[in-house]
Amino acid sequence: MSRYWSAIARGLTPYVPGEQPKLANLVKLNTNENPYGPGPAVLAALRDAVGDELRLYPDPGAEELRSAIAAAHGVKTEQVFVGNGSDEVLAHAFLALLKQDAPVLFPDITYSFYPVYCGLYQIPYREIPLDDDFAIRVDDYLGQANGGIVFPNPNAPTGRLLARAEIERLLLGNSGSVVLVDEAYIDFGGESVVPLIERYPNLLVVHTLSKSRALAGLRVGYAIGQADLIEALTRVKDSFNSYPLGRLAQAGARAAMADRAWFDASREKIMRSRDRLVGELVGMGFEVLPSGANFVFARHSGHDGAALAAALRERGIVVRHFRRPARIAAFLRITIGTDPQCDALSRALREILGQCG
Ligand code: PMP
Image (tube, rainbow, N blue to C red; front, side, top):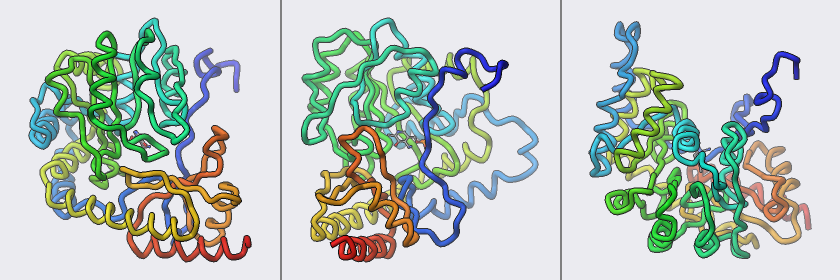
């Protein structure tokens, strides 16, 4: 704190990202990265983009990338917005669409960046409790004035999916405000609501290339919605940073969107490993929430989540543990790694559980 800080800087409670440990040889299962990395077509596109052209600014409108995303989803280029990671896309959406007089609604257990954006942009919000099974209950979002609704599908950190018919009920019951569906993890078994954008002018869907397309290090995310919603995001972006995506990011992301085969192969491997790991965890006595994501959320009765995470770390394995809210303090959020990584985790957990009695 310094006397030079603005009132906004003083009042912020920033988001705390998962640790990026500097230690080598860790089994890193804490930030939902994809263990397989981008495909050769992406690496070739990145190499081609490194050259003399780097002295030039990138395309501020990212037209070619937006049209590659549009082609992958069967929508129009003007229905696509791109940003520096989906975090930036979400931030712009909060300012451009969700900042209204009535509060934004989101689940009490969800992506912890949402309340942070509300703090940054001074947006009122109300948290709606998940039900006893950690599911979103759509009825709780109906019949109350709101400035918008946002939730991840599948939800994070629970991994639970909300059915498309339920999302339609939410859209129909909230036609006066924007419903933002954050589909960061939808490619691991869920059904996207992107095809609904034609029918619902209040629907905005956000995706990332950080998970299923294995490009967390490149920082690319996007939103899909009707053109007038996209225009609002573009107005905010053009009032903030004309060039959020560099030439490398645009080139690599374009190649990733075009490489359907690599995308399908990597997400299918991850889904198979998830099924295998869930079987192992259940065999050890863990309760595992049904997951549609590249992570699982699991707890073991009688074992403290923080203690389990610490014991794993001593064995060179990092997973994510959230102290708050208290309802999830017993859980571990475990990213699905390669099968050998999942096996290392299972071995370590068996050892710890044995030691703990
Ligand atoms: N939404 C959710 C639900 C997430 O878990 C994450 C990853 N932390 C993001 C969005 C942001 O991802 P990125 O900025 O890497 O696109």
